[in-house]
Image (tube, rainbow, N blue to C red; front, side, top):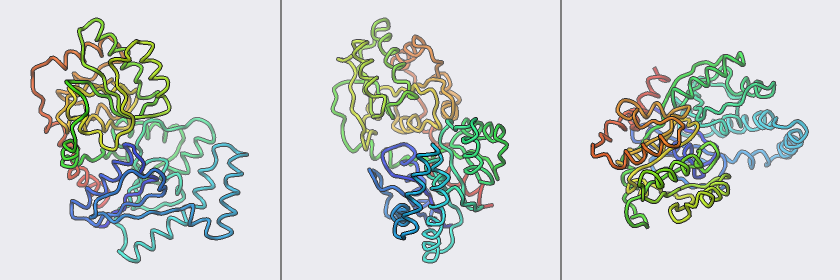
Length: 382
């Protein structure tokens, strides 16, 4: 089988990391796997050598012709006049460029059996393409709709396409949006993100975290949706009322960082909270942590929870919208907490102090690379 995984960029981020993982998962399964990306700025990931790696610089290819350069400028001017319409013009311009480059690859290697596009940022750039081999993976429960422009966007990007959510929560949101906008997709399924268990375990041993003693960790983009303020308030309560003494380590960066650091000062937690910023390899910190917390309002999937479980680290999470419920099943349901500061604080301390062992391998096997590759083949190649 020949498969292409397509993603807009390979900067540090969960979706980008998953795109690489997926391309490698197909290669490991013995398939001919290709990874295609568009934007080279801030690239943080490179797949292993068994994956064919392609950079489609759509902007550069468009600008190589005078008419293409003129149309590109016109598209930006029109977007300035009619706000948030750039996807319309860019798709009309970039889709032919993408298709031309893809066909050149197929001339060399042969026709692709499956083309997997990851995230709205990717497939909105080439939305006019309709091909039964293409699966558009939707990563988030945040799907804009309601206004005429938003609904037109959904029609352009979703109509007649194979859509798949990374979790049952995302699938439900897709179906809700399709119903509201009267748009009909070709298919709607669920395919979870793959977990390269061996790679994560190896990376978790690459170095020893620069910290003494036990600690709690939070990993992810620092944005309002991640709800770090809630974590800080729960952590504050646990320190003041429940005897918690472990420090809190926050890994990640984002546009809410200034507010979060101000919150730390307001709560007088400066001596107990440590910010590490973005880390290319956060797994050693996850492995050596006594507990990983997730407090998001919504998660497309909640990959960081599975990665922590892969590192044999206990987790607790807020009962967020989206994919967390796909992960926190069976015995893990009791570690899924409503948005209550005191309840979350109590669960942190309770989990840290419990003596029972966790069956980590059981929790993660459903998300192994081999399992996810088989699901793609079952859904789209039979």
